[in-house]
Image (tube, rainbow, N blue to C red; front, side):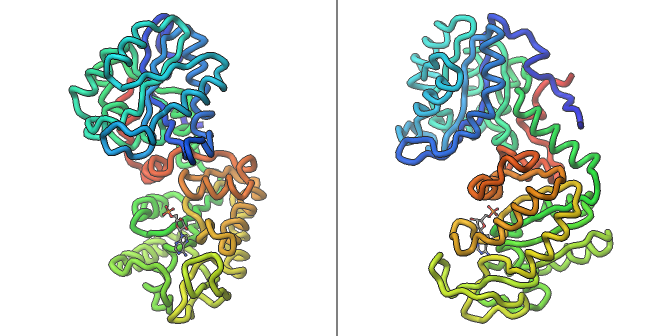
Length: 396
Ligand code: AMP
């Protein structure tokens, strides 16, 4: 396993110390109820460690996009309740972030207590990585622990700025994410297969470029495949396509050839006359999407082709669904690929975001090696970029 060369909570004495711990509690909510608490569950190991080791813990997170102002819709109140249930003791929620209530509650903490600040994005300064705001946050604590992998690719006040004012270490989730993904990239068992899908090529250019130096095979499905198909001169009808990326798609195909990476595109598509679940649908060869229809999922021949590659893989990285999986009628490709990944026996890493949601919804979550809690962050890590929220932490 690739070791992380950053200090962790275990490398610093937290007993009796005020610890400000940045977590990623950006969970989906429906009518004020948490619909998926994975990110909270993943944060518990660090929270428990801090509480058990006598720290006075001040948790910080963002939730949604409240645009820099207080908005009850984005309150962390349901999160405080859930942490408290999982921890088995009360977790108080401050009414503000750096205001009177937060400071009063932080001062009253006893060893082993845990509190949560309100949504840090109620302050516009957070995303600006404003120094004065970081300093205010830091003034409440003596140690900074970052365990918010999902926002580690953003240099914000609470993800990176705090490290200017406090000793900074990481928690168990960041350590786990980096070590699992790092070891897959640095020393993969082969064949190493990347599966890429989702809506846009433009979001994944960096990751394709970087993976071309590492993997044996790249399988491309989802909406982004049609830009490649069009670049090859195929008829893609009304399918989603980035016309300004056609040259780039051709360049990537050529690069794959020169690096002897097998880059496979769909052979067939399930097409629809409208972008909705109940649309008329049929399967067509990829070269011939009718002019008035759009590709919504990969077809059976593609599933067969991709499955063969996946079943022979020893390491798999997957980012982006194979079709519009939110519509049941177009979820088959993503489901079959998830099933193949689950059955492959390979080390399998699912990037966060939609592919993680798809694997969870389709019921394969417990059959893969690792589902990342960070969509954007895992993509940037796979691209080989430095994640600022990790870069600022103290080296071992
Ligand atoms: P991304 O965030 O780039 O991974 O894209 C995920 C989104 O891509 C999901 O909401 C899918 O519905 C969408 N998607 C996948 N395949 C297609 C397709 N063929 N046409 C349009 N959207 C697609």
